Length: 169
Image 1 (cartoon, one colour):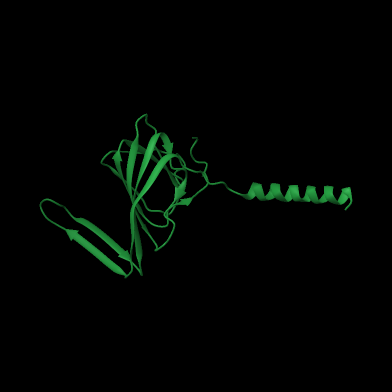
Image 2 (cartoon, helix red, strand yellow; image 1 turned 180 degrees about the vertical axis):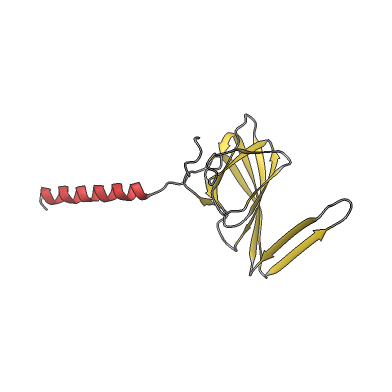
């Protein structure tokens, strides 16, 4: 093989590699977190639950859950060291997050102003799963979340996403 052909092939290969790299969007991995799956179960049959309460103690409380044909529910704890973050990610369905210890700050990819959503121990945060977000422990103390996922059976609970560029951190 002549040197000209090798050089030309290398140049074309390098250009192709650069074009592919330029079009790739890299996921943002978590750092400083430890996840422990408490359990995951599949509800095989379609169901609908609608519960309303009216009365002196509860004023117009309502919840509805519907799954067709099936639904996985998974629960995990996620510990966040000081300065830890989840990386940008999304979910295949809604996720209920209860801050068990410490303080967590959440940011949404669709918020052009990157406004922090701060939740402390005993408070909850609902991620409906339709766009990327990031969870960060921006304090000097550890934090822990108890996370409940609603997902299609067997689906990955977390989908890594690229940094949307709306936040400066």
